Image (cartoon, rainbow, N blue to C red; front, side, top):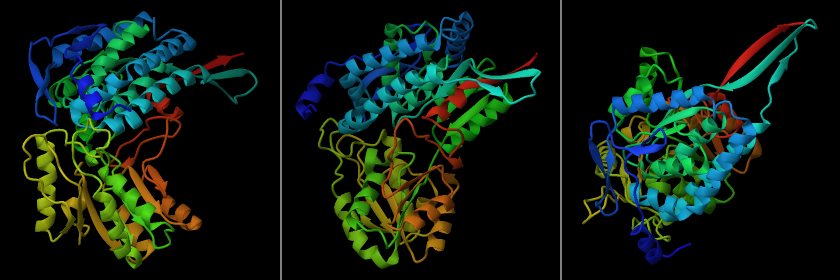
Length: 494
């Protein structure tokens, strides 16, 4: 791990790709328009990004369709696609520090998280998806002896992908790796708040041997480039990670266009439940702090609703505040800093607005609170709010910041009802030493993922996704290929 001084020196040498990547080359937006990419730590300009719109999306989709029909990728042997993607993963490893710096400078994520989680996970996802693709077999249906029923999987065609800013490289890889491995062409619209790492990845993909047009990266705003991609009649499927509000809009756009399938990983308001039979209160308290303050709380699975059984509540809260105090906002290039800035001024203002609203609704700030404007940088602080109830906005709505709403409970039945009283269903965490309770509660919680005596753990072999307002479909694991392949049934009369 480099020191702060070493990371700072490396950051001063980095080059930013700032144009759209379409059909194997960088090009400006058709309109010539740009928008600024701002470092949220220093508020300084990193570069001006191409502000793409409908003509650029049209060009990218046209290139993607042409590449798909040409068949150099879509009809290549799975082993050949694997070879190129593994070479691309090796190139990512060679440029490991560069990818770590790009997201840290672009959206404020701590460099320790980038080197410990985001970049390794992205490379692993690409390698795993590449390795699995030549090990997926078709099926033969159990039909009568005079027939042969073949069930095969094929690439869908042109995939539109819209990814968020909180894990720019990693969230993109969860979409790109299985979609490309399956033989599709992809048009990626990364978040306008963090596009730099995806543009660099596209450039390396060509170096690895990916044919031109198979991967296109089109930076721009959601209401322009994102809308154009979702409405496009020649996009066969759309994969999205982002807010529930935008997810609903994308599903409407699909209905207004060609009924393309829309795969959604949307918002969350994950409950973290601590029972009084939790054997290690210190571990649970540390886990609760990690669950909400990691990545400044800009995490879809953040444990933002904490429910503690009343018998251990005082002891637990004392421990929680000790661990929360370790999250002091600072320069994300410092490997020892656990919290960087919020992604931009608007997100900082959102966090402050929710804290102010919680106070107006009767909540009590136990730690942190509203952050006054710093000299520079969009820094918030770890905040814990107690005396909360189910009708408060800070309990019901996704804040996407380091704000934890705390409430007590008496019985298992009571806390299950509290946890499920939510429009979201992405993640949940349960802390108990009672094995039966762990199984019982995890089954009753309305969530796509449940962690027991931990939070946020997983790897590429485990599906990631939610239910209810948190979406549908799954990223990672073999199940992710269901989003990027089409089943075909062939009936042969013998």
